[in-house]
Length: 97
Image (tube, rainbow, N blue to C red; front, side, top):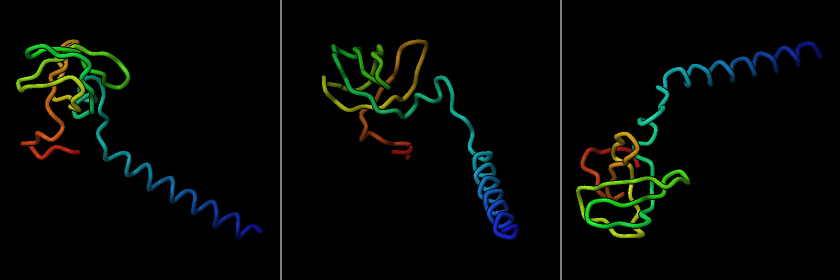
């Protein structure tokens, strides 16, 4: 019984340790950095500005390319409370998908 408990405790300690070691290597993304690359849906658009839905919230947005209502886009940058967006398939930097 004691041997079984010791083995289970050691296994749990190794599992927890490996998880913590892996988490230590990942840099936390917070604030504006956390928004980059997030998907969004265009709600309304006129010219180069409009509104998008990202993370369940309505945001003002701008883009350097033609965008239409209903397009799937992603957040490229954020300045204050305005998102800069791009089409989801427009990737020139090899960013994550």
